[in-house]
Amino acid sequence: MTGFEHIDVRTDGPVLTIRIDRPEVMNALHPPAHFELHRAFDHYAETDDFRVAVITGSGERAFCAGSDLKARSAAGGDDFPATGFAGLTERFNLYKPVIAAVNGVAVGGGLEIVLACDLAIAAEHASFGLPEPRVGLAAAGGLHRLARQLPMKQAMEIALTGGRVTARRALEIGIINRAVAADRLDGAVETLVAELLACAPLSLLATKQMMHEGLAAGSLRAAHGADFPAHSAMLASEDAVEGSAAFLEGRRPVWKGK
Image (tube, rainbow, N blue to C red; front, side, top):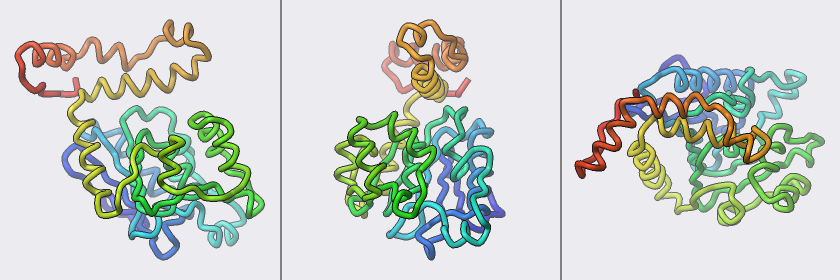
């Protein structure tokens, strides 16, 4: 994809990598950047050939420092696409996996991006937090995700103090999946991407849909009785037949995504 000023978007076969490219403001986002990210994630969602997306930041200091407060002040408020902060935090119908490669500070909206991703790997020098209360604001959607993903006491400590936690602490409480040395971040992300690509694409879609919508069903009984279109499509797919055949024949499956 081309035509972006504030992000860099690159493809490598089935993998789409989106890099926030505003290092001069620690990759903080202003309206033009939000709408460019919205376009990039739309492209990922709509392109069948893409199976995994990775979002990261430029430079070594910051993944994303949240909202660009100077731009916000000049505009008199926020201007987000319908899909929310970074075109991702309110994108509730994307069932392809998204990985956060956290290369530095992830605070405010930056942490919201991480929470909106399915998986996250961070460099050991990264830090995480929701500093909004310290500037007279609240983290909005980030609070809802935090309360659902972490034990409440841990979520409340991050939300109410406005302080930061280290990558190691973020790993302990479940914000991220792995913490690695900065020079190993790219390799760790590549390994995780390879693990996802080894799985059937429709299986990943079904898995993500069932986990998210199953939680929204309100009870375990309701989740078991709910209809998940991605699961039905997976069961009826050529890949479901291929997976069983490959297992029985002792070979690697060849996924077609259909």
